[in-house]
Length: 499
Image (cartoon, rainbow, N blue to C red; front, side, top):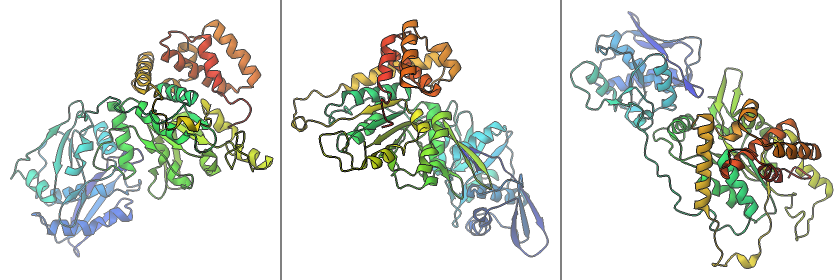
């Protein structure tokens, strides 16, 4: 059964009694699970198995944890068949049954199959009977045996020994789809100028740093943000497993695995729950669905203040805890935040066009991004107006996106070697990691100390500048963090205002 971003092994017990025929499900079953009684009756009616004409009691243990998953249907059907001696489990290893029953006896895919398989494997289960439509995601889990099924009748024929199952899959080290690692189109081909913003994207892609683009409307902020996914390397096997599980829980990709890094772009009118996660069934929100990818928040000051402040935990801890009255769930949320903002409500403050905003409106607009949120953003880049004469100029030399991506991949490889991890990047360094691995030269440290005092940097911002400089050093293939890396990192700090 799905439980948060992971799973929970449920032991299903079945008992018959000589009373009026019926099915009773106990063990904190939700309405979706209790409705399995009708699915079981119809599925047995359309399958070779017989539903005993007795009072059938099904207990879902542990009984004190709410059960909300329709994937328990197949386990309940198997428990009935076993109690009625219609099948025999002869496998030498423990088995689990996951699937939702259709009224015609078919077995349907369920959400969160990866988490369920991982939870079962941790408890010693190595054999899983699942819906055939869940197979594409299930094969990502290593070192288990999968028996895909189309119907309840196929399960009965397999377990009563009358028919040998034609396809039993041993996953070995995991069967991951091949994803091409190539950049076929330059992501900056249609973006004129904005060299500073493009450099900020390169640093962000290399070290997983958060970026805020500020500038008037129509200057390419959104185009720059949408170019970032093309610069990122493909998902590793571990990342593909994590991302596919989260998107399966979200109900978007129940059957196919996620092979590309997520790029989530919620509208500023999106509800707080849809972004942070939660709801009746505590599903992951946009923050978690962007895990290992990019969360793009266009017009950041227009988002609800409560939603903006909810970014504090995931930006700092790379996870989000959703607490409700009935349950508390923690979802991973290790994403790169790309945000945009106008300088004022009308968008033209500080540009060649006249601004119609009052001073108090500009101040209030800029203060919508609180200090704690701004403190968690590493790169602040201004996006300037573009000369119209250059927009249709075909002689413009496009930014070397392919060369940039090669530098990014090389920088990430250096970080993976430094941290002995395929997923950890400079943006996730702890204070202990910074002291041990940043390798600041004495001149670089002196410049940073003076700049921190003049810019009145907080302790968090101080350490983030070091992380940023370490990524810049990796892009330059430098073993140590030098003065020029610190000075470039300081250029991406906000100078006077938040925006």
